[in-house]
Image 1 (cartoon, rainbow, N blue to C red):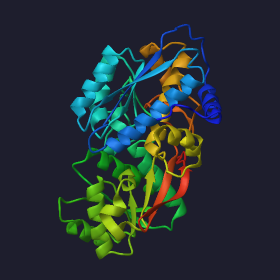
Image 2 (cartoon, helix red, strand yellow; image 1 turned 60 degrees about the vertical axis):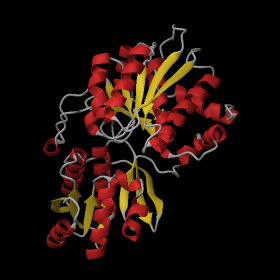
Image 3 (cartoon, rainbow, N blue to C red; image 1 turned 90 degrees about the vertical axis):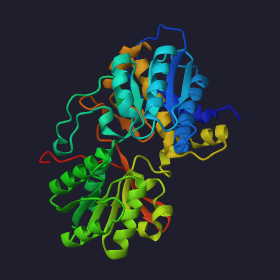
Image 4 (cartoon, rainbow, N blue to C red; image 1 turned 60 degrees about the horizontal axis):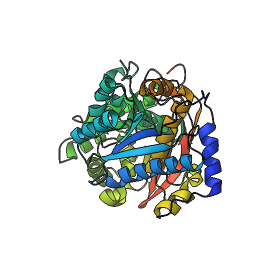
Length: 396
């Protein structure tokens, strides 16, 4: 496996690293150490490995360009498999024993919720690639989306959250599609699914579109949900559960109500076409990044040379997470975790692959992040808008 980085890629990287920060002189000389945990060996290993490779690539590019203020950068990784408890163990070891300035968490659903309170105690920032809003704002409630509650002081998200993605999709379809009557179909036992349903409904209403029904999924048989959808007269339905339930619902709705337009959450970007077959065709959904986003071409050649594989969106998230941390170290002038935390919170106009990142201090999530609006055509994904940004009107 080659570790050579093309000169052009180093130049691109150097520009991104130096952009939009107000650096202080780095007087420390020891390596800047960054922790990383993910599922590297279980069912989500591909995404975890992609994110790790993206993070590794940015570290290699940093060091090839002379390091950070002359300091080399080191990435220390740990495998959490599919376990939230293992994620806590991995974070704790990295934070307490490895001398890292921050830890990137690329874990499965639920792991960030377990790690974020530990990060507050350890006082080493968690920079999470998860999308669960509750990683940074654990008190967020479906009926009070405008009141996020207390923020986890040491936890941050890198990309659009689940609520932000749902709101963005609603904003897109309300503005670009016909004036449909919308319904939501959610999993009542999945808090993140409920949050997404309520966020979608709120934007639909604020956009002067009709929210015709809010329907909780049944376990197993989806016929009750289909009948409720039929009674509502909805012309489009947002389905926002886990991928297996989304596929079941899509097949049931398409069989009974073929004219209803299907909309999905981020899970539709995983394996909906293979699970739902023809029922998924024509559906719209929002994703953090599309695989054909032009910005990915900036690092794709170096990624392919190093790993002999195509770049996927999870790798871009890992690359950006390392960049965000390095930008904070440069801004703080130190790799002291508490100072890095402060700099992360103050991040504004920082150049990432998909544009710029402004950290919302009230939520520790990106403010107005872009999302990719995708459509399933047959069994293929098509990008309709690679970087749609939803900005609610003042009246919303």
